[in-house]
Length: 219
Ligand SMILES: Nc1ncnc2c1ncn2[C@@H]1O[C@H](COP(=O)(O)OP(=O)(O)OP(=O)(O)O)[C@@H](O)[C@H]1O
Image (cartoon, rainbow, N blue to C red; front, side):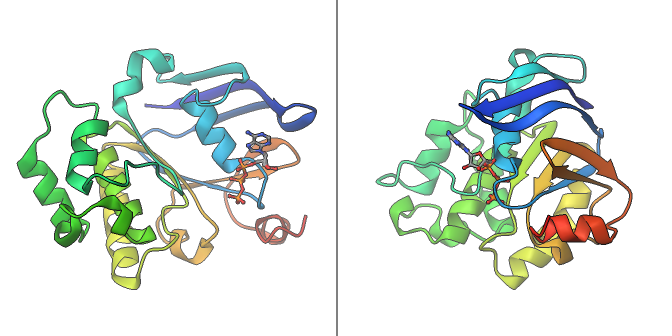
């Protein structure tokens, strides 16, 4: 379940974000993507699921997105929901499953510790609760590819600990890409680290001083 990116070029008008990027995200691993603010982490995720137009090829285990769309789960930093509806109603509407498995929803809601608000309107959800609802939605289809943008943002201590335990478990059967600025959170769980710098994406095996500078947005 390798994600292969070849000759990816992405611009917003004259602003080039990626210039001929070639990179592979590893199968059944936690691939941690870092980069300064505005370097293009969210843009890359949007390219992966074709929410943005780009030049180049992105293949999931040699297949194009259209063939595996149902097997991708994505959580954005600010997940879009119907705020007047309950969390559960949102899951029913937004899930790519024909019929929602209520038992699974309950199980996941308990695991992610949002069972108490599941039937409340999303407009009353906290930022962290929305994140968890979005994660629950992504997990409902048991995706082979799980892409999490800034997932650690807004999570409380217990939820962070939980996620630290769950991510490596999920990586046994899923190809995971995570982005985020909380290096301390990811350092004990990532398998591979990738950095966006100067319109390219590099894989690296450790966070040297150069990378630390870039990571801290000082490049
Ligand atoms: N639709 C758009 N039109 C024009 N510019 C955009 C658009 N979307 C993103 N950008 C710009 O592209 C750059 C990359 O944005 P992106 O959100 O991918 O960065 P990021 O690495 O996720 O940043 P952060 O760490 O702050 O979340 C930014 O300079 C942003 O302003």
